[in-house]
Image 1 (cartoon, rainbow, N blue to C red):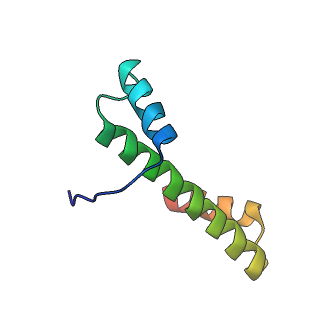
Image 2: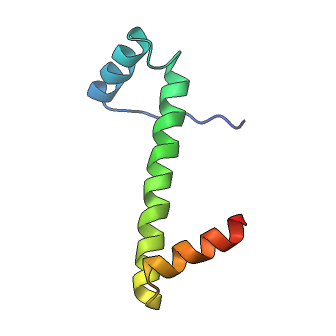
Image 3: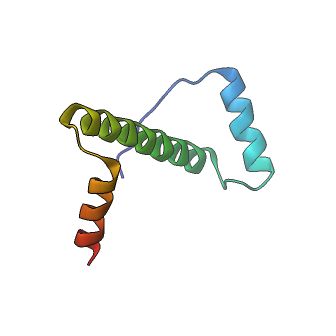
Amino acid sequence: MPKIEAQIPEDIYRNITEEIKLGVFSDASEAVVSALKKAYARKSRSFLRWLMKKEGVAETEVLKELEKMRG
């Protein structure tokens, strides 16, 4: 997996450290990866909502298509 380096605000670092102490995450890397996945998923859902609105597609239509794809 590619590695990146980032600077984060002190309060976020304290939150990560606290969650590690509580056993929520095993280390800082796991916490950051989890946060990035959640943020990207949120961004993707926002983009999908915007695209549906732009194209005039109803949520029910999208859900029906997903159901067809899942089989």
